[in-house]
Image (cartoon, rainbow, N blue to C red):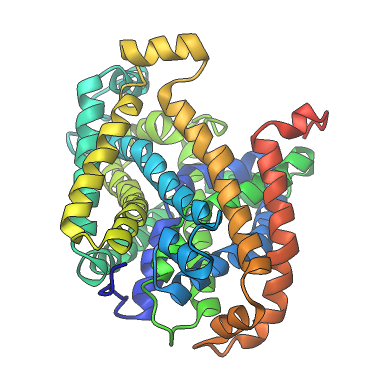
Length: 458
């Protein structure tokens, strides 16, 4: 086990890095889309309750395990249990989950670089509506571009992580996160003056009782869980670099607040643009790559706004890929004491190679053949495995281990260490033990199709 580990220089460094891990492409498109189609203001309220009652308690558990052991997932569970305990597999599952998600997430992140290039070249203004919509299909059918942008984004990720905790991750988080927030705030201010701003706020935040169903509650649960980067060891790993005089409850709460704030602000950008220029509000992820560029081509100042927008989502993607890479990197450093540079380069190359089939899933012969045979591309299979199975199982196991297996005296002492919020422990523990697992099981049952098999049509 490595004895010379990095630490955050300050509590702010941890908060910005952890918030960066949580804030990703899903905040920019999935939260606004889910809110608008699942009950508007009712969904928003339920989502906030899910963050408070489910997501935040599990996040605190992950950070607690990391800070207590000062180790990445595998070594953390090895430290807290006997050497051959099956709980160690939970640590390995976190590492594998981070590896798999990064292998295809960097492909999607690469698309943001492509669209940033298009925005800088002012391609949108010079193209017709149909031509802009066809740009994404053209990208999907270009294997060289997809693999190239995938390689570029993996290179950016490795370059940051290779610098270490303070000189790499924390330094760049202090630049990327404030810049991301300022860009998003500027876009919100601009969108306030668009003619569709009122319609957009009503679509997203007014209570739409007709659209709110039991499945909306499960959607809010899933969004809160996935949005906070839970169940894959990222928060545990970042928590392992936290000093013992930094309180867990307050720091974790700030991460949840920032994540929710960014998602809310994104709603005030995506939908005003959508409604002002007659785009399809139900377009989901297609809003970013098919609809929003059309709006930029038609609005005053669209050239500059398009560049800012795609820089914004590229930054959001990079802060997430950094944390995924760090989960893998820190695990092998802690297990074998290998140099950070070596681990970063080797693991980064392995992730890139494993991600090539995902990069080829769009329009290549490989991707088309696999989809014809199985109904899903390689990209779809990896996404389905990680999001619908591995993340819920990881979050559930974290909650059970911390709530029931970890020694009571040790757990209470670690939670109260370095914080004035020690009284929160009496509320946190029941939420972690009972509410969190029940909610995660519901999300798991819905996303995996178990509810449908049981005849529950939510």
